Length: 382
Ligand code: HEC
Ligand code: HEC
Ligand code: HEC
Ligand code: HEC
Ligand code: HEC
Ligand SMILES: [Ca+2]
Ligand SMILES: [Ca+2]
Ligand SMILES: [Ca+2]
Image: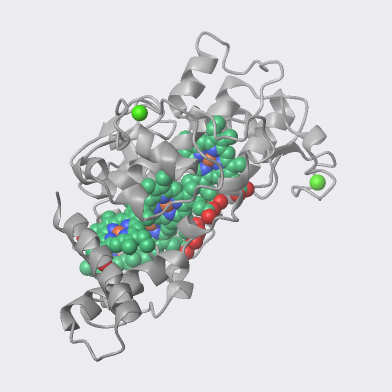
């Protein structure tokens, strides 16, 4: 049993003790140790209660409420139900690495999800493409849920043997699901992006000590950025002097490279956004030439890829309607669009692994360039 588990157990006992003392006597009772532990626990509990993990009203924990039976299917339960996660890691005594039973609905992520013997022992996380990330320590907990669903391997399987520029009938966009931070951070070590042959890709993002792992940067309870130990200053500010709060992350500029070729070296976030816009333009140009319909992208509306019917480069609300979804992908386009999804669905890719995100997009633009009318000229590949 790890120290943290022991501490949680002690703290729970202490909490019960204080409650019992409060109920049974009005006399002053000296229990400083218990009170100290309890207040520490209260801080942790309050942080957790305000987090997205605790948000029992979130779509992520209520998506299956109308289903019959009312349960989270095994393929989804690992990440969308506390019981499902415990089943996956074997905390309920069932086989490890597999969800055996459907999960409960409205079963958000709580203390018991992450604090149990099986979670303590967890050291590796399996990505949807089968790659295992090892020696993760407690970050294996986070990485098990933040690795995504679907992968570039699924894309490769789908297009195997097909002509690169022939439309695949009724083929919608393929992606990696949501918030797959572990897959972004691992870069080529995870291989979750669609990596083009003959190119080399950045591996796990080696940022700096002590900001290399999930829990070094994220408080595991509030999920917010950690503070500098013994202070309430934002951890990032110790090295990035322009950072005071989370509003400033998008202004961080380290490399001073004009990746998107717009003539100025902006922040990492803005450069990635710039290249992303070029990739969307390339997909639109390519699809107009090869699919007979113009591709448009709206990350806020499912299923994200729609036909830009008037080809004005933007998607209106009407164009973003489900029946207008873009379903004329060729293999070449499916790969590039997967990379667009990969980078878009981790809104913090600019922090988790900027180089990997930029490389995937550059190579996608290059692959489409033969027919898209959009070249890589001026762009920089890190
Ligand atoms: C590897 C973990 C994982 C698996 C497996 C998984 N999801 Fe998710 N899913 C997530 C995460 C993380 C989010 C992000 C939640 C958010 O941002 O609201 C999410 C979000 C969602 C959302 C909410 C989207 C929104 O608009 O808020 C739905 C719906 C969803 N998933 C459906 C599914 C379904 C259906 C399955 C099974 C076929 C599934 N998920 C499997 C991790 C997973
Ligand atoms: C998403 C996973 C997760 C959830 C949910 C979670 N914890 Fe933790 N908790 C952790 C991790 C990881 C650590 C280790 C932190 C470290 O060592 O830096 C930790 C550490 C702790 C500690 C040690 C003190 C500290 O702040 O580091 C206590 C006490 C604790 N958790 C209690 C709780 C309680 C009580 C809940 C529910 C209200 C809870 N945890 C929910 C992951 C989680
Ligand atoms: C059992 C699966 C699971 C585990 C374990 C897990 N997460 Fe999550 N995480 C989710 C889901 C699902 C959401 C989306 C919740 C929602 O929409 O309310 C989420 C949301 C988040 C968010 C987004 C918060 C926001 O406000 O948008 C962050 C950051 C995060 N998790 C980090 C972590 C870290 C760090 C760990 C490990 C200490 C971790 N998660 C462990 C499933 C998990
Ligand atoms: C260098 C510090 C750092 C590391 C390491 C890190 N993160 Fe993050 N992460 C952040 C910051 C900062 C944000 C918020 C970015 C923003 O608001 O634009 C974030 C955002 C997220 C989000 C929410 C995405 C969003 O913007 O809505 C999730 C989920 C997440 N991280 C999970 C993880 C997981 C899991 C790991 C480990 C595999 C990890 N992070 C590693 C700093 C880090
Ligand atoms: C201990 C020092 C240190 C801390 C703390 C730190 N960083 Fe960094 N950061 C660096 C260094 C050094 C680089 C350049 C790394 C490289 O490009 O290899 C960098 C690069 C970056 C980049 C640009 C990535 C790229 O490849 O261009 C972003 C974005 C970033 N940091 C965000 C953050 C955020 C957000 C936090 C707080 C959660 C943070 N950093 C905390 C030292 C730090
Ligand atoms: Ca199991
Ligand atoms: Ca620029
Ligand atoms: Ca339009």
